Each structure stands twice: as C-alpha cells, then as structure tokens.
Length: 146
Image (tube, rainbow, N blue to C red):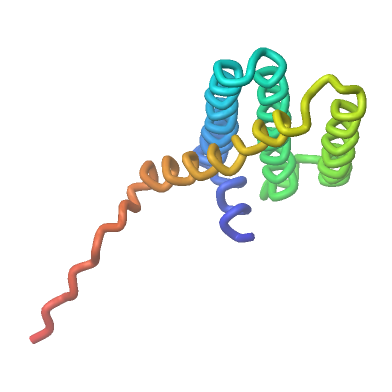
C-alpha cells in the first residue's frame, strides 16, 4: 500500500503520469480488442467490447483520482467526499453493467472481452513505468574488499 501512496503523492507529478499511462494503455488495448472483434464478429460485438473497455478505462482513471485524493499529504482534499465517490463509483460500475446487460445493449461475451483490456493495459503501463524509473534490472557489482 505504501507504493500506491508514494505514487499518488509524488511531488514531481509522476503519479499523474502513471495514471494517464495506465488509463491510456487500457483504452488503447480496448480499441485494439474492439477492432479485432469488429473484424471477426461484426459491429454489435465491436460495440460491446468498446463499452466494456471504456468502462474499465474510466474506472482506472476515477480510481486513481480517488486514491490520489485520499493519500494527499497536504490535506487539501476532502477525504470524506472522495471516499464517498470511491464507493459510489463501485455502485455505478456494477449498476451500469447490470443495466447494459439487462437491456441487451451489449453482448455479455463482448463486455467481458472488453474488460480483458484491464489486465493487459495495466501490465503494459507497469512495464512502461518501471522502464521510465530507470530501474531496468541493473545488477549491482560487489565491491572489492581488501
């Protein structure tokens, strides 16, 4: 949990960068999956995948904003409001998904395929942020002791 707090409260803006990288990676994989679904299965499948990917990309962005506000070291953010928004986000996500499925606007498998963009995008953003931090697996050389 300390890594999340450090990323969220980094004064250099790296927390902001990691949020945008994660959300854009998830959205990018969502577009890729939607195009593949459209080519293979048609427009309805592509729209369902796009909706699923859009839901998780928006969820990553909002969750990042909530975490950054809750771990704000300056204390300027209203933690109660952001905590409420974090809980409300969960209900909106679950209720919205249920409504989309119950109304038939999206296909369940297409929505699930769009949600697959989440782990793919987060993995790519984690690798990207690791590479940017300069921690590329360099070995430490043992010091020669006399």
